[in-house]
Length: 195
Ligand code: TYD
Image (cartoon, rainbow, N blue to C red; front, side):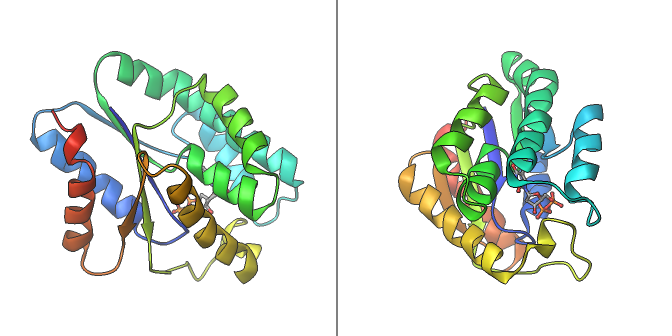
């Protein structure tokens, strides 16, 4: 089973991804945790370039670099894990590209969907949890976080738009409240997928 966690920067995804993986493991499931971009040798190198505040690149190059990191992670880690029946919990996946590159950068949903599905060979999460409602961005922004308030407003709106487009796969999770409260909402949104 493949689950991704999504949302604007600093919404608490990473904490929740770790908690979810831990809870699934406690029920005896094999769980592979990953993050995007990254999770492979190539992916971590591409991540360093993508987030480097000194790096300059056009929007299309940026989209293709995210896709390249995703292709490698899918082939090397996610597809083999799914093939042996493990659960995969990924901190960001295809929907980040749809929102950040497709909607916020303005490259278009359809072209980014095509590039991303090419990258993953069609692999898509069974459920995507979009955390929303809080903004805790870092004081030391990386290249993406430094993109400006307008850009980040488009990102927040973009995730809501995606959830409306694919309501079965993409579920909105209110990220306000305690870590435990948010974890319980996540748990509920996965109930129908659990063995
Ligand atoms: P990261 O430090 O992982 O952010 P966070 O902790 O908020 O998840 O940095 C990833 C950044 O890259 C984040 O700003 C979102 C952006 N991103 C894209 O623009 N497109 C993508 O396809 C992915 C996976 C991430």
